[in-house]
Length: 81
Length: 298
Image (cartoon, rainbow over all chains, first blue to last red; front, side):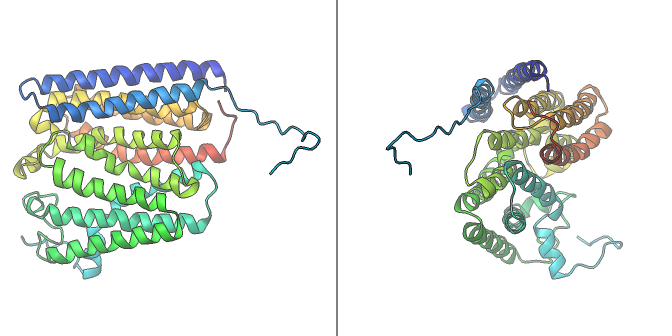
């Protein structure tokens, strides 16, 4: 698969997720304008924080270079478990 | 309440099965088993044990839910034929059955699969019974949002059964089910407002209004579809999954868009409710298909 397509989709999805989460919070602010309930705000904010954390982890996983395991020959006298 | 004349005669066995809500569990099992094949190559015995344990745990949670909700089940047309409100089963027998099969599931998963799997399945049980049913369902219009986490445990259970740990892909599967829940259940709630109103359950359309609920359905669906694409970027899935996720997600977005735009939303909302069930099942099937039809990953 073309890496460019994946990269574009990745950033488009990140942007869409963040905009959508922001619009959900804006909508929540509208419906909670009268209520001013800290508990309801908590219910809206906890998933938003979890989402941001997951997106950061996804970004770190996406940009992490692949791990190449090389099994070097043992040095003279080296004992391997 | 007298049962309709066309209804088949109920036996104790059929009532016990109905307490577990088998139709709902069938989707939970898809979201449990598919991640097992994404995480690795499970033995058939492990798959069988996880399916059985998962059924018993979710079935136990559903039975306890019917015990706790027996008062409102009696006033909602959708639920008044259930075993307790119809008088076919005693409430004490129902909770004993629910706790009994959930306990059996915990023992079975811990003994024959691994402790992490049992702990996650039990956490889903507690979340559904205490956080959703007991606390949020009758007290917050965001009951479905936070309560959705209960239905998102099965992918974690399936993943842990194979790997005995949880990694980023597993958490993404959790989030996919979590964000799938609001548009799915609000599509039902839009059409069942009178029922929920009679039962004094503060569902979003009743508290926030229809327009704001439809607005949030739309943004939750965008968030959901975006989340389904992201695992491709870090190599969890390949092009087969990506193509299917885009098509399935596009159809869901179109359906929710129709609900958002419609003044008379009954038909499109029912459509979204039905399609979203199919969507989740096919999305998880696509994850497995991607593993068996590799066309080159990202």
